[in-house]
Length: 91
Image (cartoon, rainbow, N blue to C red; front, side, top):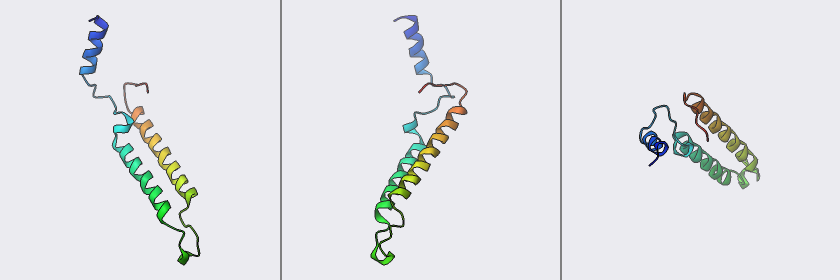
């Protein structure tokens, strides 16, 4: 074992308190996925009623706009999480 690999193993064993989680393991991502699924389901279920004169009150365009805003919100949240981190991570 080289000195570099020993140091890397030691560094990996000690988790820095400034480390941030991988984006897919955060509460923000879980809420994002749930919100996107709810948006898709709502878009599919709401509208296209004969009682509403065949008008789709929450169509695919509205759903995609909501999903876009959710995505922007997730990126801002992740950016703020990384900006608040003292140790800059790559990736």
